[in-house]
Length: 310
Length: 250
Image (cartoon, each protein chain N blue to C red):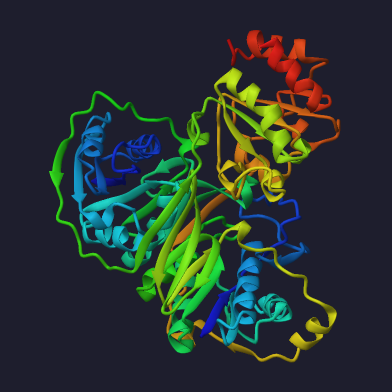
């Protein structure tokens, strides 16, 4: 039995989310291959070959894979799907964009955002914003799966000795063209990979306050910065800060929720964090029901005090 | 240009979900049901395109039980011109819904299909992409801005780390993200008007689609409960706990 993991990368380096998907593949069991589709992506292929447990890296290098457009990528995956019992990708925006297309072309179901593997056909995935866990069994010949990265540890990115082979590129379908990207530039760690996250909600009052109050704390802790949907909707910060059912799912060592009431959809994105701290002036805020340490206080006084105490 | 807007009837987003004691699913008895919030955004976007003169007709379509007619009436109260219900009592999974929608799309020949990026019940985030694949169309998922041009559309997408703008050829599928627009409320006169708009009912067999589920649900359970911890008195105690008890900061 062989499994194919779709690598997440930016043509220059392999993204950490791939390592979690490899661990999920290893739990299912079988020979693990990694597909790297990109343009000028040989460095990515070399990194993928070093992942512990990876037997083979297959590289499709062509200009029309540079931007990871779903139409071209899905066609390539389907053309090379023969012989694989499972096709997995991390549940990143690329993975979520492309894999359902692969599943439909193969006429199989997709199993979205698995958080654990029961056996080769059976998986656990959250539904209803994580308020229930469904164990589902697939009867399809090929299992197409996206992997919630917080559900699996990262595989070691060294020690592996996979072979690298070139794969013939498919045609450019020409249905989609990237015009530009506006990525948030930040020296801070990525939300998905951070060990500590400082997150602000509607209680911050404004975008200006959000930055003025939370940045010193994030700087001190070397933390990533997140936000609740309420803070995003209020325009305090861009949407890629959003933690929750409709934003990013995170599970850092320490999650500090500041001025966040704790709506169900926010809890869905952070309740698997190891330690949760909540600072909120409302003693009845639902966030306190999941927090390991709660402090009822005015955040504008408490956060600077916390920065000073660290 | 015709726009097709698939809408799903789901448990209302304000309802606290309860897992059934026998582990077969969640309790939907006497629970308020509403249109999936992302699909509401899709209907609103279609209406804005129609009001801007980019679209001539907006058709809402839903797949599921008879009660989905209510969801379609809501879509028509927001402004959809007519609607189609693909009626079945079978549990529909995303692949089956995509096949039903593909069959409807082949009949109606829309230039654009706008739907929510995910439904808040199964959180699958699949149907739009699957539909695009089955029709061989281009796709723009997680849209926060849609501009229709001549035979093409420019769509800004919410992606990890920021935004990405792509140009896709029409016909195409667009799936909506939260910030695309703020849906309007249906007014009472429009709710009354919606009752008279045409609603066609078809069966999966009429469309020649096999809707049998591919995934069997073995069990549905409650997630492990996270219990409330303690309230600390002040910052000094908080720092002490984080350093010495939880050991998450140095």
